Amino acid sequence: MTMTATAGHAHADPHHIGLVVEHPGPAPKRTVTAYGFWVFLLSDIVMFSCFFAAYAVLVSQTADGPKGSEIFEQRNVAIETVCLLLSSFTCGMASIAADVRNRFWFYLGMAVTCLLGVVFLVIEFREFADLVARGYGPSRSAFLTAFFSLVGCHGLHVSAGVLWLLTMMAQVFAKGFRADVLRRMMCFALFWHALDIIWVGVFSVVYLLGSGV
Amino acid sequence: MSDQTHMQVEHDIAPGDEEQHSVGERIIGYVVGLGLALLLTALSFFIAGTDLVWQPSIPVALIVLAIAQMGVHLVFFLHITTGPDNTNNVLALAFGLLVVFLVVGGTVWIMGHLNQNMPPMDQFIRMHS
Image (tube, rainbow over the protein chains, first blue to last red):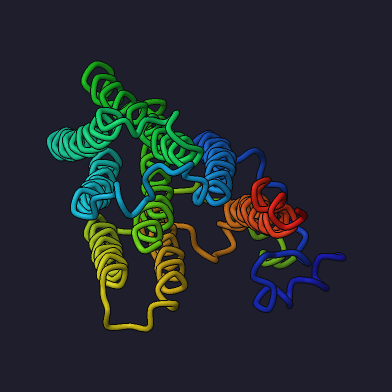
């Protein structure tokens, strides 16, 4: 009886705060799993923000070593950025294919994502190897320490993502599109998109802002 | 009693999941996101290397473009919306952003003041000798 009083406000109350509802019970496992992973991703982003803060503090502490503008190559960074962006797109295509259970497009999307991720890692690794060979390793100055930790930490995440991607392809191959495999696939897609968001911060703050200073 | 009061609240939507759309609509969403992100990336790289704009405005422009691109990723790739089924995802994101701004902003602020008040030792000695 008391519920009738609030029923009329349903339209002005999109979040149903004033409405007494029958409790719908626990959310589906897909929602709970993805939400937990979402919280993990946010904590991962908080961890990256610490690396960003350290980089911002140490960027001018070059100890007579090279400045950012002397060691960054914008062409390589542009290729890396496009690779990661396209791989985010193909990862989205693969997750749509997984939702409609289309094996061909799933394997194709994941394979292209993997290829683009590996190209990104190869370019980054060659950049690091080149810097170390020129004597500009992480121990040269505080600036380079912060640079290698921030960019290297992102690179480690991408490496872990590529391994996870291959695992997902193997699981779909062996087990098919089971509910638990699809949940893992959803978490992987979240992870891969979040890495791309962090890379946007890296290329803007480290490479583009750094090349001007 | 009317059925209205007993309406079932739909469950929250998982982060990354979309509301019911056809495959075509979902693909179009990703294509639009990719196009916008590529455009913003190209703008960032163009602005960083150009002489056409007032130079002190470049860092601000780069940061604005980066935040815009993160927004594009969140909306078109991670499907974070303002819908009622997304409230929990948005709240978690808002808390994450709060911590990120506290960490980065606070660090830059405090360390900037420290650098100002404590110049390097050689400068310090020169100042007082």
